[in-house]
Length: 115
Image (tube, rainbow, N blue to C red; front, side, top):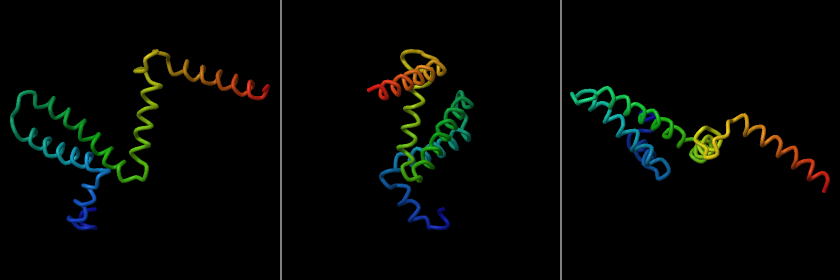
């Protein structure tokens, strides 16, 4: 998009307040990946893997920042994953959660019909 809009407008849109953090993360991870790939550092492969993981997440967040309501959807998705996956505090499985929600939903609907 830099050649379509021009470099000045592209940099200005990348540094907009809602995508500033993701843009800086993206550029820094690209630069650091190139630096680590070229110099000889201890555990270079480990550093490259770590930087490529950060780079992948940076691309996701940067791309999402261009979608209207994208960051909000991503944070809601992240909250949902944290509630339903294994890192939840009560350690219920996903099938137990689905069953409990279905039972509560059925009981709530019959209760509201009775009232």
